[in-house]
Image 1: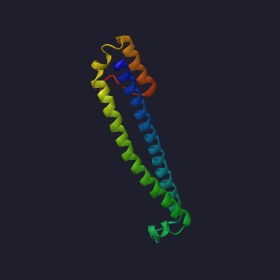
Image 2: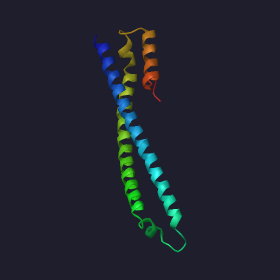
Image 3: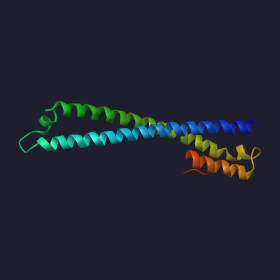
Length: 137
């Protein structure tokens, strides 16, 4: 009973950590695309008015729309940087538990399940949740 509950607890924690990491990655991707979109809009707006005689920083700050886009750009970039750090931390937490699960593979599976049940479990974790418990990579 103790081994089975250990497997279940580790599985639940693995799934929770993977979902948290995936959520942070999706949010980070949203901010990356936002930064690219805002940069594209700024380049388009600046290309309409910048000529050889004007200074780029004067044109950049000449319109309230451009100032607003700059503000949005800075906020999105700061959020993207923070989410990158958070995603790295979540990935390390997930990978450390995954490695522990793989390392303890022999101890966890000896008495609790047959080989076919183990393979079915590992395949389900990989297919349904995207968690590879077969080996380190």
